[in-house]
Image 1 (cartoon, helix red, strand yellow):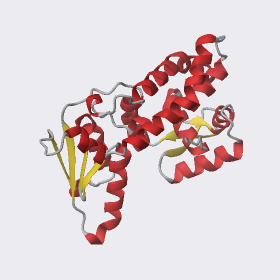
Image 2 (spheres, helix red, strand yellow):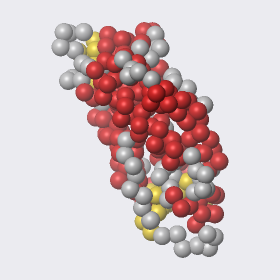
Image 3 (tube, helix red, strand yellow):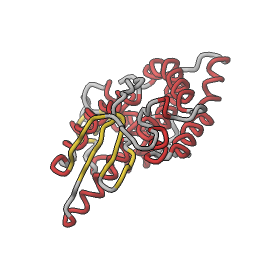
Image 4 (cartoon, one colour):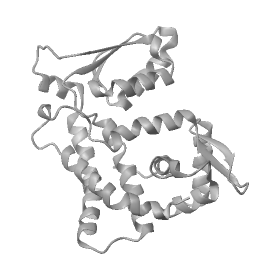
Length: 265
């Protein structure tokens, strides 16, 4: 089940609305806008501090001289890469991207980092040191490996799966499809009722639209990484991912722009 933590909601806010601010976002604005999603001021301040330590946010000053925070260059690149996954329908490739890596034992911390980042990008594990993903992830994978200075340990290849098991059977080994389906179903349980209410009820206020969109995006943005756009013909016939994507797309269309009037700088 998705937990809307303060830190996650702050990242989601910057991805959805924070980039529209000219310059750093004032702390007072963060407190107001995260407060609308149920986050109290102390939690906003402590989460912002943690994001600053991680290099995601940089301290600055607003036009009136008050404390403010802006995205680091790395954070902006991360969000831009995420835009293509979160908001777009992936151009599913018939090819596969294969990452083959070898890390010396004395640098095993980098081995752990490499595995965890490939998993977060949506790669499946074929064998020790061999990971696979749909080929449309090649650009984002390259950006991530360069940003983390892991390129000396990795070789990337594109190509077809030639066997020997049927590709659908192999995909079911490389990814935990049962777990992925459950994540889609949890998203639907949380947000499909909200969409039905929007379809049949009155238009939400700007604040209601902002809050609904922020929570929906915070739930959704993880799914295109867990489920990296696998070819539809290789997935079970009752795959819930298509319905989850359609629900988010309609919530996005109905709520984002209206919510922006509440989040306006």
